[in-house]
Length: 384
Image 1 (cartoon, rainbow, N blue to C red):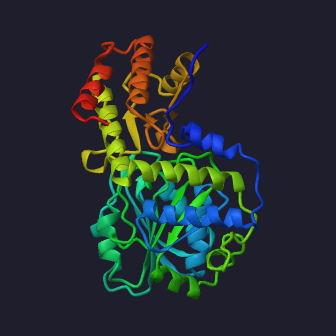
Image 2: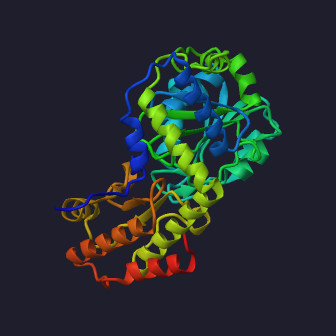
Image 3: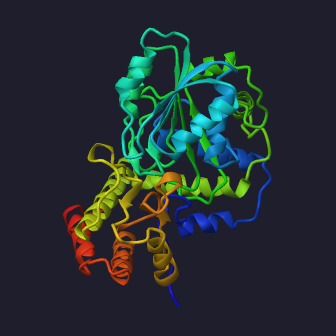
C-alpha cells in the first residue's frame, strides 16, 4: 500500500469537502436552487479576484479563457502587444495570430522576467495598439511577472490589458481592480481546488467597451451572452453548465473565504519559500531569477550529470509523488513542484523527502534530510 501525492501545478489536489459536494444528486440548471448557487459563486469569485466587475464562467480549460479574450475584445487586423517569457505567453502569441491580429511580440528568455518598460515604450505614442497580453504566473517556468506595474502603464492608454493568471488567482496577490487589470482569467484545476473543466474570467468596464467594438466571430465563448444570462431576473449560464463542478466551486470558495484571502496568499508564500529553501539546501539551483519567483510553482534546474526525465519518473513510480517536468524547450532541463491550492506544510516535506531519495538513487551527492530540515525551519519560523 502507498499514498499518492499530486504535486503538479495543475491539476491540483481536491479537498474532501469539495469532492463530496460533487457527489450530491444532480440538480437542473434552470431551477431556483441552481440560480441560488450560481449567484453565490459569482459573488465569491469577485472576492477572490478582488473585483467589482462581472466574473464570467465557461465550461473549458484555461486555454478556453485565453481564446475567449481574443475573440471577444478584438477584430481581425487589430494591433496588440504580447509579452512572452514562457509556454503560455507563446500560447497567447499563437492565439492572437490564429485570429488574424497584428502582433508585436515582446519575447524574453524563459529564464527572464517581462520588463514593464518595454511595454511602455511600445505603447508610447501609438494609439493604434488595442491590447496588451501578459501572463502573471507563468506555469511553465514558475516565473511571476509584475502585472501591477504593467497595469499602471496600460491604464492611461486606450489598450485593454489581458492577464493570464491561471496559476495566479488564489495563490499570489492579484488585485484586479486596484491594479487596473481589464481581463483576468483562471482555471478550476489550479488555486480554486477543483477538477479541470471550468474557466473564470473577470471583465472591466474598459474591456466591455472593447467587446462592443469586436467583430471576431464568437458564440459559445460570447461575453455578451454570458453577461446577459447573469443579469436576468433569475441569473443563469447561457448554455448548459457543468453543474457538479459549479457545486464543487461553491464549496471550494467557501473554504477560501473562511481561511481569508490574505491568509491563503500568505500560506502559498510560506509553502513556496520552504520548497525553495529545501531544494537549495540539497545543492540544487532554482530556475526562476530572484526578482521573478512566484509562489504557485517552484522550478528547479536538473543537476549536471542527471537525466532530467528520470527525476519525475522515479518520484512518481517509486515514491508516489507526482511532480512536473519541463515543457517544450525546457524538457529535461528543469522539473517543477506545484504548491497552489489544497496544500499544507507536510505535502512539501513529503515531496522534498522523495526528491532527496530520488537524487540519492541517481548518484547525486545529496545529504539525506538536508532539504527537509531547511523546509522545517521555514515552517517553524512561519506558523501556518
